[in-house]
Length: 292
Ligand code: PMP
Image (cartoon, rainbow, N blue to C red; front, side):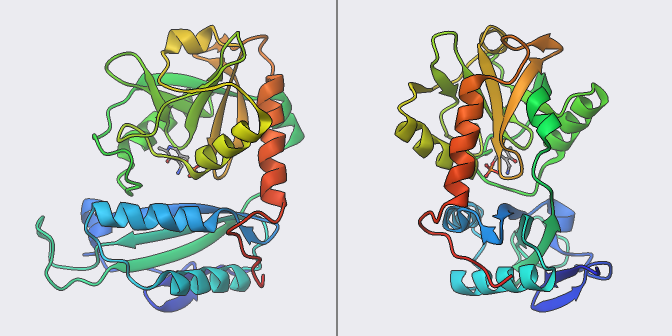
């Protein structure tokens, strides 16, 4: 089926959709994005994603290109035109098109692109095996809380992971503490069953899956500490996992080629995954069924 993309006011064939060569996203990575999971036709935690989008834009002093309601209507139309019921919506807003100059253009209009992609849920085999991560130095800038399209360090690290046969790279700061994955947040469960993930400040992206899972954690009565942890602590943990809009909760069974716990997905990890999946499958607040 031919795919359709939304580009600056028009619905275009995905294959032919394009932005201007002087779009500042293309030249300076001067833009932000969101990836919103679509589960059974529902944009999961859409409001939280739009809150984060508005925050990212605000931090970069890029104007919201249109009202939230308009963004919501377009996302539903892109989903409808692509018959999407499971996968994700990609939404990107850049500062717009202007002659190349580092300073902000006076008159540029923010550019908006939306696409969707179908994705199957993680296979039983993948969930039973868990995934491997490697660790790499975190060489990113100091404002990782902004969901900017400037992802080159993340791409380099993800490629390194791929070449090492791993799914993800956990990035490690100058103090030896894990910040996060290249496109996921990092979690461990200690031998005493304490769930640990790094606190959300400018050092990491505050994942929407992270936020939603933390609510489930409180409901499940799991002991929880929001703090950083070292690679050594992760290696001696009982369980580990990653979270993101496309992975939900995914068990990590090896770090740098060494088994985490017994080398199998942890029980608490899988309980949290179930809690998260039943949350997104329930009629949770702030989510609207689409016409798709
Ligand atoms: N950290 C980084 C660096 C990311 O790119 C992502 C994915 N956007 C995440 C964490 C997870 O965020 P979310 O749960 O909103 O997908």
